[in-house]
Length: 428
Image (cartoon, rainbow, N blue to C red; front, side, top):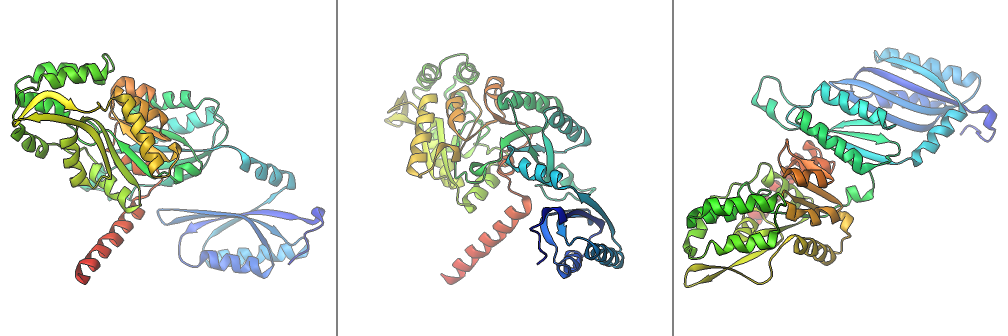
């Protein structure tokens, strides 16, 4: 090892290499560096469309030895048909770079059916104006073949940025406005340990996990559809108290035959991306819950179909085969949802920062506000404005990308799980 105790003799060099990617490039170049006992201080690479950009910050032997090192690196690069450049780095510059690692880091996620240069231009301009430096860009979604139906597939890009954010709430608001203008979802999260350690996801049911508002479907069957739909919309917009409106709507269902419920349950439409989301969460060991202001009968149906762990909803009272217009027990309203989220987190030995909450209505706001990641999904304007995160242009499986998951990881995990299930079936 070269003696580096004398700081005046240190020679720091940034080496940049680019060209057609192929196996063996890193091995060839680092073998040269090893021969001269260079110390690696930083390393990174990116490959875009089989074109490599490779960088290495090294401390090299001073004097004549460093000249021989650069010569041999140039020969190695030439044999590999690569371009190589050397840039000296001062010790002051290096110390400044080291000190910057203590700065706050955030993750910006772009989600949409298509991500364009306009979207990148806006986010880059905004980051620059906010004194945030983009130091890494990662594609989370899979590669899309040209000229196929796959062109409409979800696109997801993650940007790692460094710098202090003075007002994260204000930035959420700016991103929400831009999302609505450009038909794309933009989210910014603090890049901390909790982002990678979330383990519980709590969902609203109606207009979130499913496209239906089941109480409206029940009302149609009871012949009071218009009356109930008007009250439901006002409650979801936050115009009237949820619990009061809930009792009004349930009362209008009095006399509906209970044997109509199974058909209504079978007709529920699962929201886009729901099955992929929950299947992937289960494979990664997440726990899931439905916290619904709707009804237990339909939540049980979803639990069986999707494999949800917990359900809490309202139980319709049935007497002599007909709905009485009342519910049994305490109503699951907005405050009850937040309380249940806390109770489940405690039972799972999780802190609230490890919990994700997803909903669309005003009665979901309390649980969205206390969860580490509160997401308004295709939500009412009031909810979009007050929630910290919003998804509107993609399906529920967009949540996977907010967690930093990549398509190839999800697909590989699914293959492993399916293979394990087949092996277990063969064993039995």
